Image (cartoon, rainbow, N blue to C red; front, side, top):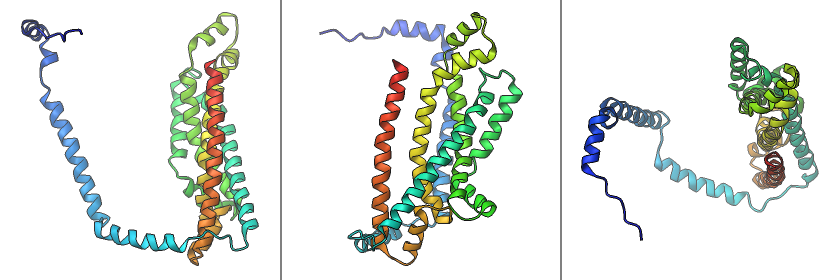
Length: 284
């Protein structure tokens, strides 16, 4: 059994004299930390008061929620299973086409936002700020915009997802390109390759598995987003959900929720395996 080394007081004293700045307590840093914590607590208290947070209301709401849960059982399609399945297929189509369009648009733009591909700081700064502006608008807002532009329906939903994901995927793609090992690109350049050759053979093969994994994750997430935007009239199963909730057809609502849950779970399992296969293939 090894002994625990006891620090020598004389050695510690010598270190204090040699490096006093290391052992000096930073009171300024502590004050700043305490001030930030106090600000967070104060803001949380203000938010609770402003939003009329009440434990009594929560407990009363839980009782009401239990009543709704009882009314939702057992799930029943109400002889509309075929229509619900068609709407679910429409939701999946919205998510797939929106994600695909966003990935195709984001891929070339990401090269302009990557510092190791375009060294011009003005170009990649401008592109990145543009991507930030686009992704700062929520998909629900994009859905409302496109509904007023192209009308109600799934086409507006696909455009909304494409716009929202274009900004996010563009940022993620460019960050993935910036983390690529430079040795492959340097080898291509040393062999007499041009800048395009360096990008084609040094950057693209290294990032494609990562980009594919990100696109699969976004498709999985957009399946849920397509359900939400359907509530505002962008097509899909969300339209049925909002109609049934308004008329309190809760058994049909639970049937739809169960249908969505099964679909999302299946997509999650498939996409997880595909992501592991892509990342595993890259590692090998």
